[in-house]
Image (cartoon, rainbow, N blue to C red; front, top):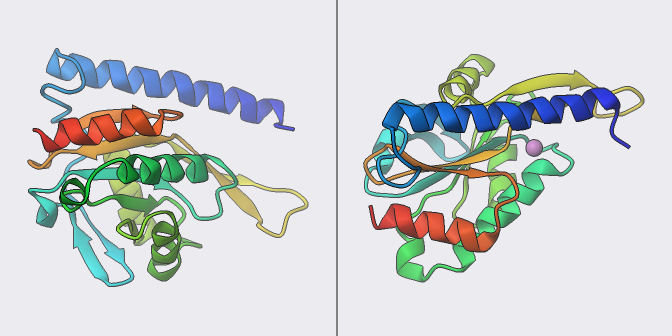
Length: 199
Ligand code: NI
């Protein structure tokens, strides 16, 4: 059972994510796929278990980015599974031009090794990223990710993280082309990735 406060919080998240979509849409004055969201996100460098990864080094690739945490009970699992299922619908040459990233908003528990292993569990090409709380917060804020630490009573976990759930599809030029909202089908995710590959 979800506590009423959690239900309210998720409702607020849903409204905020719609708001962000509208706000970003107004910035470009067009739909998601044509011009994208030049004022959202931006370059960053975070840590993988194989060293630093910079978004600016991934120009020429389409980069779906998802923010979450490895102790997430459900939301991240649903989203990362859907991304993996979407990738599976593409062919090898398309997949070679796509670099999925999973960024932890819980770096206190998710070091690069842990988040890296977690990301690869969903898809072998997915890179897990972490960093200091300050670094991760800066990147999350640039994407208007909403997240909050929530203490858990009677649990060994100690706390969970409430967080918004959007896949940011960064195009080959480094500009976010599409926001994939929570619950999109793998078909629609595959389509969004293909559209981004086409420019
Ligand atoms: Ni999650």
